[in-house]
Amino acid sequence: MALTGKMVRLIRKLIGLHINTPIRQSVQVEELSRADSRLNPLARMVGTPTECRLQRSFCAWSDLLGFGRPFSEADWLPNPQVWRQQAERVGAAYRDQCKFLSGPDGSYMLLLNDGIVRSITCSPRFGVASLASWTRSAVQGHYFVRQREFSQNLPGPRTVLSSGWVAEHSYSEVRVDDLVFDYTHQQSGLSKVAEALGNPVMVSNPSQLQLNTAFSRAYLLDQAGSKSGISGSRFYLDQRFLDDVTDLLKHDDQVCIKIVERNSDILFAVEYLDSALQGVSMDTGDVLTAARWNQILETEKAESAARGHSVFRNGSGYRPWAMGFLLESPAIQVDLPSLKTRVYRVLGFFPSDEDPREFMFEL
Image (cartoon, rainbow, N blue to C red; front, side, top):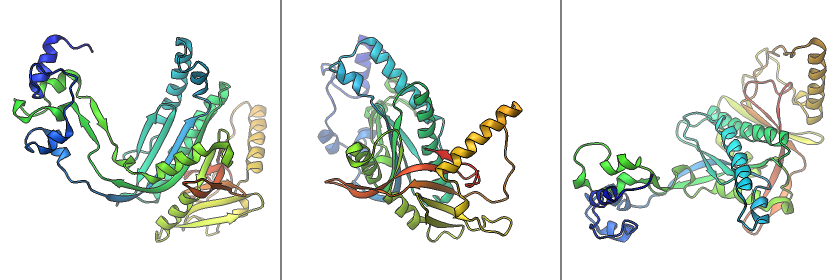
């Protein structure tokens, strides 16, 4: 929205700037920190001490492969058609990801150009249900972006899931109204200038991403790329994620962690202790492999074609896992100057509402 001369003068007056001061002049933080705490909300924010509230954090970083190539090939001055194509590509991925939000659980998602970061911190109310729901959202976001991109002959996304800590240290945002002097407020609520401008965010520092080492690890592993064995439109899992989930849930009396190495894959399962609803434990040897899942898909496709409608399976009587991963074996050894870890290519994800012997999201 273009600002008229009258609005500019109003803004100057309401935020306490001298009438001859250019509107582009910023309010210096050093001056605000010395100001009376009653000056405006920003002065009070700047005057707060830096904290360090540590919480465990899980993070998924996903970006679109090959997204920068059209820009670099055009020397970063692409024509309007390229701009439109790239905007439509990232916009579609953003909308796909937004379809899978885990709810009001303290999680957060941020779009950065063609990259999307999801993060969740372990609050006192955090438990296996929150973790399983958030992880499923991250998996489904990747899965459906990948399906749509492949249908359009696009390279698809790559996603890395990791774990670490977040150190919340400061206020999370500054809005226009935070700059307005207290004495200019004639009534409670937003100031006139904030109302006129929509009180936009001027500074953003999301609490879920403040000094977030899970985000750092996921981003570094994605950037390591094919030179480190992390290639293609796939879903990767940092060993730290498995370690931290195991540590987080080791005292939970509702679930147990199972890690089973098979011939060509590894099962990582968060299993409910009462999963055997019929009194018989599930044999992990019966849990899907990638090859077995492909056979099921082919069989269902043939049966559906023969009957003229989709075929639905009957329930098995077993309670599904809280969540589980089918991991490719062996792990990828990553040796970066700033990070050394093992990373697994995820072959499949077992959600909390399906029998792991009968269904998985193939990744």
